[in-house]
Image (cartoon, rainbow, N blue to C red; front, side):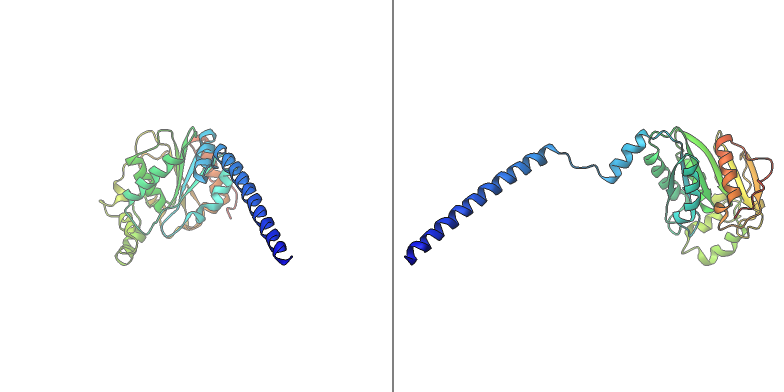
Length: 259
């Protein structure tokens, strides 16, 4: 009797395993067939490229200053997006590489992100403005828009003269911002046909107002601000918006207090 029961259990066990194997085979077969018919979802980069290929908003590329990061331009980016622009907040290692190398990197990134934008504008702060000028000299976008420079050391900066001997090994680009006639900041030539507007800070202790002027620039305005957070001021945002639309600042800075 015991032998018969054991034999029955073994037979039931074999049948159960057979049925499970068959069911698993069917399930796997269906899954494999379904997987063959479904394409893998696009990657984040591919999805973004597809969206930008259809996005007809103008693109604004933001370029931060020395020792800073895209976070320093975050508030300006949000304001520009609210104005209806698509924004690329470009990040780069400001403590490594030459201005020419950084300019080439900016050109590549802007080219990758242009998509269907009818125009590509650039806004830079401090060192970022010289990086933009290097990009313009090397490889400007085909659909080049306007450029706004915030506290640009276009004639070099006395502060760079003072600090280059001490920080030049850690921040090579600072040597290119000196006021010597052969410095990069003073020798880069602005291409014809590019609308450039300059916003300087009256209380800027890093780049003096007189050091911000650039031959060929279309407009220049001075606001009652400091260097580091010039891009966060309300009046500066209004001036930027005006220049991107019209290629001109107003004859005087807006009356906003500029927080």
